[in-house]
Image: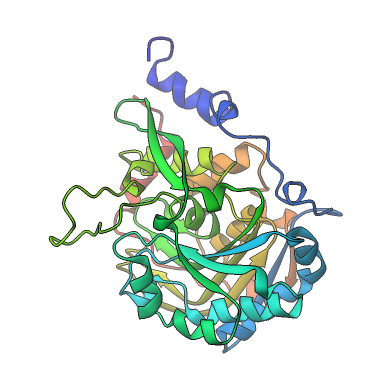
Length: 350
């Protein structure tokens, strides 16, 4: 970096000078052709049945969702960071509720469920989590993103302040697809919380066939997902923000029926929360999710960067809630043991 020192780089990046060269000006509703009367709307439902909660959360937006999808292919992107830890993964009942909703608006035959699991064979995860039963109920396909077309994007690494190439799924980048993030409400050991945006950005990088974290890994296989982590807490927060312009959901569904607290995204403990959040505005959905988890929004780096860049309101009062009241369903989640280390993003760069 011959023209910037490290402090100048971060300051310029967050203000938008560097980011403007790699992300487009972004408005969630405008980007999918939906007119919005005022502030973003988020639906909040509660109950005892995941599928029913997801269906009811989406119902208020039936017309807008149908309009936004049009003839596009619908990509339902679950969050299966591990293939054999049910608590960390998107529940099959949440997917069923969304598919039933898509059926109600005549879009079920346009849906696929697509993922690139972080630590193992994606299709094994689909089988372990019971997704196969959906094939007999709906005209849906199960897709391993690792086996599909890819493109290359570049991310920041805090060790050398240089761009690093990452292979990512073309399906999630293609603006002719309608991407639905089907996330689970979880704390995170690097960026405080993982909700709808992070599910897309960290699910998009692919790995070679045969890769796993086990000693039985196929020799020579590579996983590109760690590259997006940027070698640290600053790097990951910044890359989530920087990639959000191209890799974001057009519809966010966050299942908080049973959340995860503590050392998420895959080593935490269950939270009986019984909530579901949905919105055509991913930022608003994530902002509401953070509030429901009792987390101080000021501590979540990547979402603060997005708010500073004008992607959505940090002020929760500027989001319209359809359904239940947020204040009636806040349940503080225990945060990761690494919390203090994670907050390094808030400090000046030395």
